Length: 138
Image (cartoon, rainbow, N blue to C red; front, side):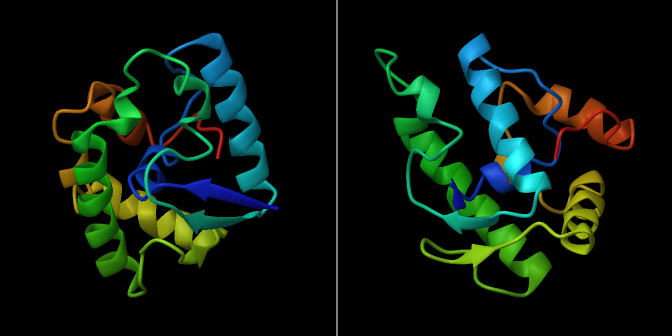
């Protein structure tokens, strides 16, 4: 199988520690984190992805807002530059240990954080990065 992720979620998975919008959201994300740990490939998609799925039943899910699409654009640009490979809809990649380490180092250095501006989770993600990604689930 393949995990379907929008581009900005490539950054979110770096700091995921089991916190989220609801119990259903966390349970779903935990399953995705396990799949990524097992080495499943990632397919970059446009719009709502496997992480967003539990939120789609809400009256106005934030994953459908233009701000989420802008986060995708910014994250894709930064991760593409970091990894030296296209991060566009339809691209696939895997989070092997070296890629994960490189992405976390860049995140900690602030090189891939532009997409995080204004995100309600940015403070938590900063704390996780400062704590050397302790307790992350991916």
